[in-house]
Length: 175
Image 1: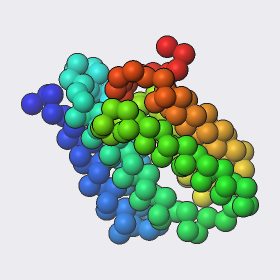
Image 2 (image 1 turned 30 degrees about the horizontal axis):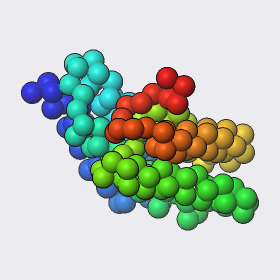
Image 3 (image 1 turned 90 degrees about the vertical axis):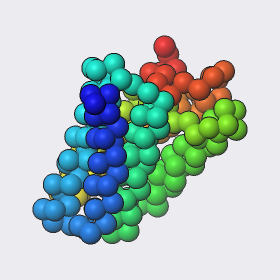
Image 4 (image 1 turned 45 degrees about the horizontal axis):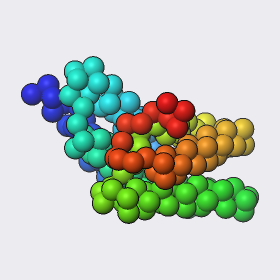
């Protein structure tokens, strides 16, 4: 049963992410948002702690991350006012990530998203950034997040090009 706990947590994150569609703001949104963020950190930690990591768990975690990100993006981005170059940078980062996934799929005939330190840092920064930005519209947090996201996207693209076999847990291009 212990071996299923990380995957159950990832599955719950997917369901909770979907509930965000009913909470566009307010306390309910923030409670679910923070539970999703904590569960993202907890599932991988528990999988490694109990030594129950699996390919299915890696894919489920990525699906949960993408679901959460997509839904939060659908809720927050339409009401976010940013200069055009910021939107351009966000679209560039998204394009790099799609290219990395496409290269991985082409090379390995399976969905690949790599759990690098950079990607984990991007997820953590995004999780922390949203409340700070919405509360005080801090450009510092936005620029920091964009820099981290761009670097991690480029790193993943390079890894997808260089890897000879699927390696979803490659920590960095430097290791």
